Image 1 (cartoon, rainbow, N blue to C red):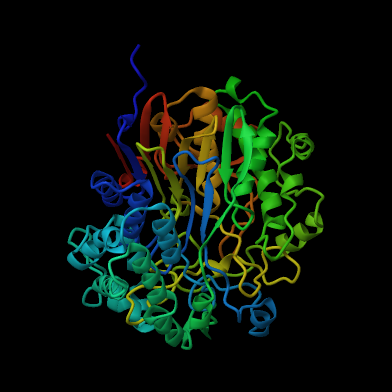
Image 2 (tube, rainbow, N blue to C red; image 1 turned 30 degrees about the vertical axis):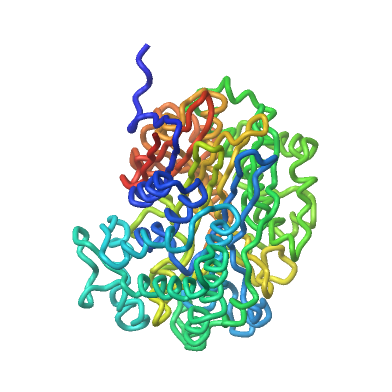
Length: 595
């Protein structure tokens, strides 16, 4: 029997497997494996390259959440490279400026850039190489040039005048003679190369010991010249998405107090698999809640392209989003009752709320005062109109926001190490470039509320509740699958669909990723201005017309996008004696390799 057609081969091998959202990062990861590095070394090198070649989706001033599993370990671990709000950030202070929501762009929504410390922690405690070994690839591309993907140019074009008049430091980096860069000529970011070269120079003054070099590199970033440059620049007043000028709240002292850290994952069992996610400072537990609800349905009996499959998943996701939007937050600051939310009893009660018709509501569980909180959240949602380019994680209006705006990478090696990481933040369109460094700082703070008492209200030196959500799956205690995607509020949705098709319909990774995708917009969106679109379902046009018609009959407000418009899933796996890799063909840039 002929195997089903896929856009790319089913990548299988025994040496190593790498999948990322850009082919240059994927090849970088494999190059590091070939030179003797392990999966974590490869992930570091690939992650730094993604900062250079997808600057509209992440950068050196962004953040890094990852789930890692060492060969022979009992369970995975979470690396939290998510920086917190500045010490000066509070709801009272922002409301005192006349703000009802945190701006989506500019200096105010900045959080501490955690990515560099996260990568250095990974390299120090899990890797084997020195800083130069993993940074040299990114420096090479930044210094000598790299090809621009169309969406990078498309992101810069609407911002040209803004960069010229309002954020001139950004114009110096992202414009060529005052104009957008040519889409088919090598593009260089030499200022970023110089920053990383200076960090390496300071690291190597510590001697030949790799641990001392890593610690010196961390010092240069968080206590040295990088922190000093950020501190100086964030005293300025620059325009943001409110249309007004505001001074930044981020200081060098905020960077001094920051360190990435290792945490336990949140996990559940599902049909013989153990699914591991980040804690409730992310939206990760929502995927686990949704799987708990779906346990009560015969997913395997549903056509993976049929209306029952789509309807059931969409309705279950709505329940998860309602809890996410009213209960999740940094557990260092608020109590998030995960034991209740992930219990079978709670899932059973939530499951009974799913009917034959599409719900237009967001109904959280009756815990932690969530129902009353939801009424207040909906009253605030979508009430502002951002001014200027770059607001929210979706880049600009001319680009479909469903395509996602972050990067992702997965790596597995022959020794049994595995990592799933979803770096993001520091988008070129989100905030002005810090002079002397060549890159902007994450605006992840826009994801907060300014209402006292909400779990994800801005609080000094606490983490925003992020959308970034890598996933690692184990089976019988061994690493089985690392999977993730860019896409903000779409991340859990796309991961869930691919995972269910793989588990219940026995689709291979590439086949499941290639299959038509869908998503709901029935949530309070995580990014400014936090819109709510009840009942909206977006589907790729490759879904059967009968499926779309039946969903509309059930009350879903269906919008059809192009045939390959949704999802940017990457994945690596280990089963059946092979390492495996797969990557989405959408946008024609993600790549998977293995041998």
